[in-house]
Image 1 (cartoon, rainbow, N blue to C red):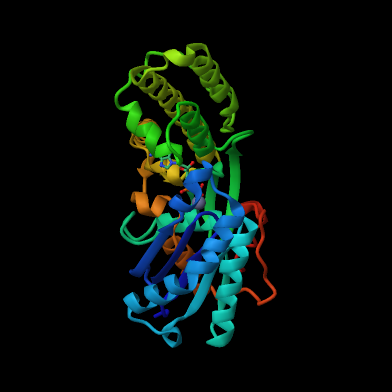
Image 2: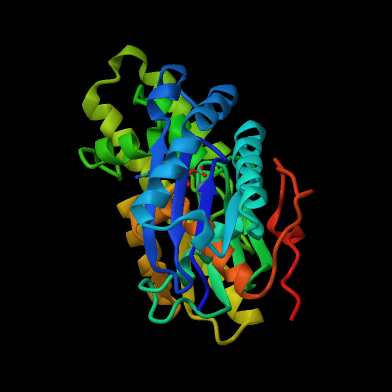
Length: 351
Ligand code: KG4
Ligand code: ZN
């Protein structure tokens, strides 16, 4: 049986560590959100993120290891997110992991953050026995919005993605227009519950277009113009109506794009029947409901990991380490942090 793997995640504003055993059992996990550090600036400040990772990562790792009840000598390897993301934080996590690996003579795995989101569905407990390949991944985060066919470890086919803003970014920008606190997604979902989703007929970009590309800038602009027109008349009730209508437009678009993506998936892989969602926006209840209905209409099953495994975490990083180490796939100490690292460029594990 494979020994446990330590995972480290520092690609954005979460300082996270986790220890996962060879079967995907979570021995310990911790996520330190840097919300209070960045909130005064209304968004993630890269230099502050890097410094905060540097400050808290060593303790985060020590405490997680101690809660897992394992020493470094008990580990089968160390996995760290090396990209894509904010370069300062990536350097902190990646170099830290390599240092520990050298000191304790452990294998090192350089993890692609997007692959980590993709492989979360293979953790035991979400789908009986872990999601079998191939499956369709709909990644909906603050930095990425993509439809990907996950055909193996290190094997992905990008079916489509956003041509402008990521969906989480759209939530954050609209929330800002409505004067809600950062990060905007959760705040917008909350106020939307008080509003009428049919009150504003916002555009649904890309709806019914061929393929599964996404676009959100037109929708965002339409909301901005509505807000501008209302000026100082913007009461809480009106803001709730705008939030609910915006969210409804996003859900309609996502459901439509997912439907196209499922058809594309079936065209290439007739046996595929799982739609997996990941990323912070996948924690939105209306998004989940819309995607569940879309999946059902195509005979797919929606797999939505628990919210803490949808947003950035280190369990997915440690688990990706397990999946790669199992196949004898490790990375050299000359592997560095990569701010850009598209999934298509990921090397497949040799058969
Ligand atoms: O995956 P994630 O935690 O971080 C990365 O971007 O990698 O996603 C964060 C994004 C933010 O844009 C946030 O506003 C959005 O996910 N988000 C939500 C919700 N929770 C988080 N958007 C809509 N509804 C939510 N409940
Ligand atoms: Zn992420």
